[in-house]
Image (cartoon, rainbow, N blue to C red; front, side, top):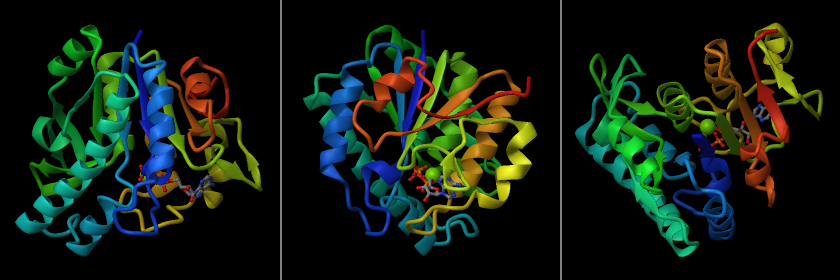
Length: 251
Ligand SMILES: Nc1ncnc2c1ncn2[C@@H]1O[C@H](COP(=O)(O)OP(=O)(O)OP(=O)(O)O)[C@@H](O)[C@H]1O
Ligand SMILES: [Mg+2]
């Protein structure tokens, strides 16, 4: 049994302020993850750690060695905070940096070294990956979102559960949480799917997330978008309770 959990940078940080971790949320989430961490891979977003640097250097458009280093070091700082909190909470976290194990082609993952991850999971370790700047065969370098990482891992590890915690109760349409999103109803909710409310999110906010997850659903793997800002939700999401929006294949 393999579970893939993403915790959004919107939960772990204040996306309106440069490099501002929400320590209370990080520690609570670390405790919740530690209590159900067996067979789990954790991916966290960059929040106000990566996006601002990536924006400053216009990393998606220009190859910039200094920008690559600054952006990577920024997201690694958040990763260290998260890993430290998980260790304190009794999990056995190990940091895994996408810059060192993934390769892109036009912004999409082309190669990712999965071997170490399966070994870590088998040995009871908790791999902790994050959104990162990653080398790209066509563009030099590009931003790899936590959302794309989880869909890639879900496919290559054959995940049983895929859960994405963010700061909303799920996908909101007309002021209400949509319980299921499929290719059939996507066009209806699409006009209300926006980017991120904090910093201008270089990885596309909720709209891009749902598109990414619909592609995953096409491959037969459903996923849940839930509110990780609320206590107790991580466990429910990993146990398969429908506490948010389920993105699934058409019936
Ligand atoms: N229809 C919608 N329903 C829910 N959230 C929406 C919607 N449209 C836009 N959003 C915004 O998208 C945000 C979620 O995407 P965002 O990328 O900011 O979060 P994240 O993926 O958790 O963080 P990160 O990208 O740093 O990991 C929400 O906080 C909300 O502001
Ligand atoms: Mg995002």
